[in-house]
Length: 140
Ligand SMILES: [Zn+2]
Image: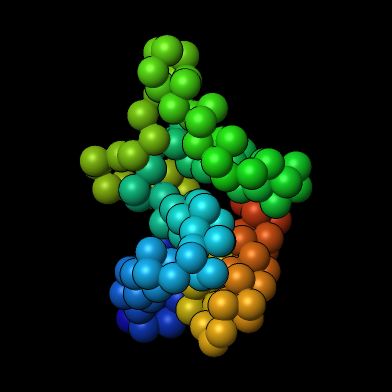
């Protein structure tokens, strides 16, 4: 069975994601792309997000990849927005219903090539760019 959300073969993406997070938390060289891994995975698995949360993740991914904003800065901005009550929406959904009707993506987490840290970071970045490109074509 393929993943009902991203279309990856054998639906192994959650296990892959957990494996990647473990790697990123253990080794800082892999952790350099942690922000991309999370945003790209969430965009492709929208049942974990609210509609506003999905749009937020897409904006974040654009800020990382196109505007080259450092993750630490965005984390600080996000914290301020939450603390000051400026962000009024919830990012995570508890309903488990996908925000997107899209069920197939050209590139999924199963296409990422692990390997050494350099290769890994490059592969994650390539996947994240493909996700952003396809996400940009989606209107919610
Ligand atoms: Zn999937």
